[in-house]
Image 1: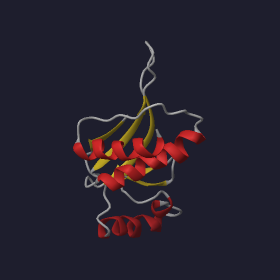
Image 2: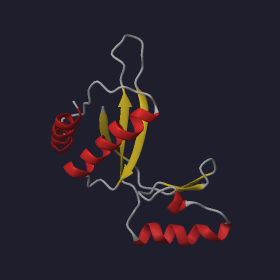
Image 3: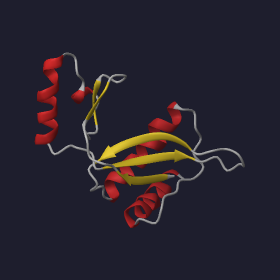
Image 4: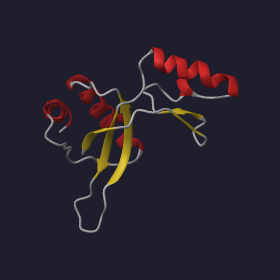
Length: 128
């Protein structure tokens, strides 16, 4: 299942990842090696208007009692995902993420958002 959820737009330093989080840029683009890196990276995020407004969550649901849902991917976005972007995310999940985790995907689902539904139709036609 996938769902797009609103975020409170903010940038933060994550000491575990060693980078600025809260943007749509990659971890490599927001990596902090020394203190002087912080301001240029924040300025770059602001210039590119890359502060995340939403996050797309991919959730694994096992159809058995007493198995809670598990988040397998969180993808930050700026809230303007369209059908082709979501389809691309679905394809990445099905062709790269799920095989790395050794997860056989039997079906995909989402809430009632029309762009998510259309992306599902395209993904289902290609993979199921």
